[in-house]
Image 1 (cartoon, rainbow, N blue to C red):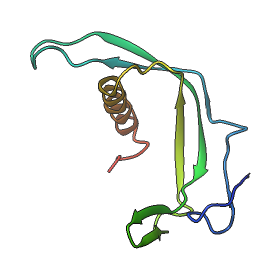
Image 2: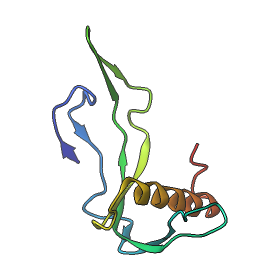
Image 3: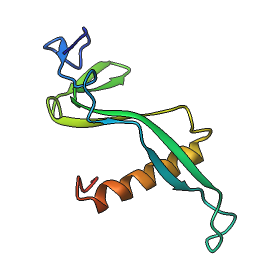
Image 4: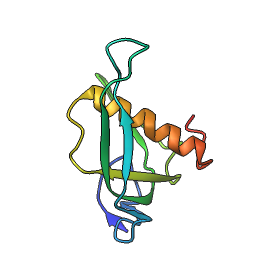
Length: 113
């Protein structure tokens, strides 16, 4: 249980499994985009530090007239994946996310919609 005070979570705590992660260590193999569609780029290995379950909180939206909170996903379980500091650019981050989505969908864990 993580205690904090913020408008996106009116109960002032978040259930989390951070102290007992479901995954400790691991890697995700990433193929970087190449110079053209027919040429593969550099191969990278992104290290995963850990992954743990926790509950989602509300979504804050800020506008000139004030802030709004959307609680539609509040309380829904999510898997938080924490990597080592291996990602060096937004291109690498995008390639990592695409590889991760492929792994998750192929394993039948989620449809990632």
